[in-house]
Image (cartoon, rainbow, N blue to C red):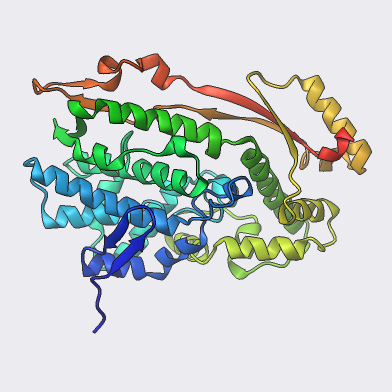
Length: 410
């Protein structure tokens, strides 16, 4: 008999207990274990060497915080059944199981028009078929269809346990202290009003700190200029590999990666759905890394150049500014790159790129943070905060980038 009541030593929270045998079985499943080989911060380790923690660690941490939140709500008189607790713990544990190699960096490159949340749902539904429907409540919570809406808020919301863990964990592993949040304090202040997750009035300052930390982490880590450059490099690398494959060239690739290099309609129906999930859950960062090392000598000079830069961390130069780059500047940069590197018009687009990144304190499409006042009413954080107003929280701050080979500067 296997002892399934394990204790995991987490560097951020200390000891995390696996709450029951079903959660242990989910953690032990090969599809979840795959998250050990998916970096939480994608290519941020190119800037912060310590940022090599995994989606596996993050998912366990988010599960732990959710368990703490359930304990707090029960202490405040909110009835949570054992089935609901297991459901919300399973939902948060599996919320990122749909992430592919390097997390967000390749999110829309491997499968177009399918964000990781949609893939997570597909995988959860496939798991549910093999687990006798035990994930039905978790799936309803994840989809926001469970009648008690505050459970969904714990998994997906402005103050959800996903954000609570990734800010604290990413701050810990990058060393960017501005991102550290007082998750213990905030969780102790959680409550429920009108079936939605709220924060007790005493927690206002902790909420303000949380929102500031999130904004700081986006500019200092998630949208760091060098990270953006590295992400453009790997997305263009995969794009070129697909183009080469479409031209009839057989590139080295593991079976899982080869599936995503071939042009196909990735339907989420029938046999194609099972094939998509099967290949996706067999794919991790080792597939990409091994392929790029081999592709450095594949015979296609653009793909070889992109792979060489990625493997050797010889990244593209990048400029950021508040306004879009003038088309004349982009054209001149492309002309110089063609001249210096001997590129054609079709090739230069892989090495000269422009686009934008943005930061928004309030995540779009997500309910606002509600504060439970002492008189029993609730108000949006902007109505009671000394730091924020609605416009400041919702403002979308955009920066525009231009990437190009450093050689043209010489």
